[in-house]
Image (cartoon, each protein chain N blue to C red):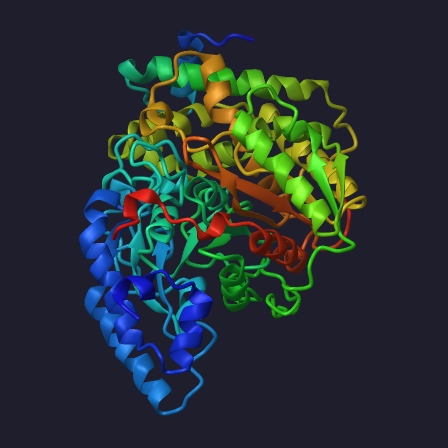
Length: 61
Length: 476
């Protein structure tokens, strides 16, 4: 997935964040890379897993 | 002892000398203040030096010792802490213009416990903005790595790494969300610990990601680190997530050696093309050393380890961006360009992607715990390469691949333990051909810090790395 600058601008507007025009390339590169890396997680079977914030001290999850 | 000899003492040796009345706490503080005056203009380790308060407190400690009182396990040790810990009446900037006027009205629990143990606060140390990393123009100067002024000391506890390597304090506190304590320890050739997540109170520590932030003792030696953790660990009613497990004497079993321990090299963090060859050689030499010392060494697999950097950023940065929403919307101009663009990009991550990363974190924990059923200690480098040049670290990203190579890759090494809430320590593990420190990272099961200290101490005592002095401060 390649994210373009227009998409980043639209997302930023929805999130009520103002991105400076001279920093749009940088934010787009960072966001694109993050989405590409996290896209790799789609291959994992995560169906029986529930997110937790803090792991139990001794028990398995 | 002359002032240089005093400043080069470990914290443990400082305590011994102070308790034996061979060293006055006032002389100890003055030795460090003199070095700070002479060296820190170039090094930029400190944001604030509390000269008069430190001398006053040193006199109090000296008087108590004269009266025969037990001052505590850190009696007379001059310390400095990352400027992320609240200190009553002392500026606490978090490395950001956003907090340039923030003066807390109470101490963080870590600071209070360090004071109660007899240590003497010298000042507050520089850091990457908001404890994130990559800051291009730190408001209080660019911290310089004593091993090579052109290189970064690491992020975000940069000042802690510099101050220890340059002997501008006897011991320090960093903070470690994704490797912010272990990373600078690695690049500066000192010791940095990330304890089990609930081991140390986070009350009064400005948050980056509240369910991964951890107080990080940073020290000159493994023994000092064990000493510091013993002081700061334990339940705190102001942080209800802290564990009620008893706090052991972390130095008690430190000298037992590694005979009988099983040590596992994490394959996925070793056989990678992008690792610096000198780092790879150092890790392989460390495995040989552990064998010589009587440990059983083997390889273990943690399949998700190579994605730990991405999972970490997906969870921690997104969480951090949410927590910084007010600043992002109302004060973006007060942020450094790197912090601003990093937080802005993380703020755009869709909920389902965040949720997937949060689930992957749990799967990663299962995989690491499975590996720890097979071995007592996990081994990897702390960073796959030595300290980069400042200019390489802060250069704008050219494209998504550039972000992957310079941003995600190294975060897998330290992010692995941050994500899984497990303890890990970085200790000096050798040097590159260019004379830059290499960090050896050891990880263990929840609350197995004693095993970590035992393993780290055995390696430290069998190798010369911790005795080297950075060339740029050698004659000073």
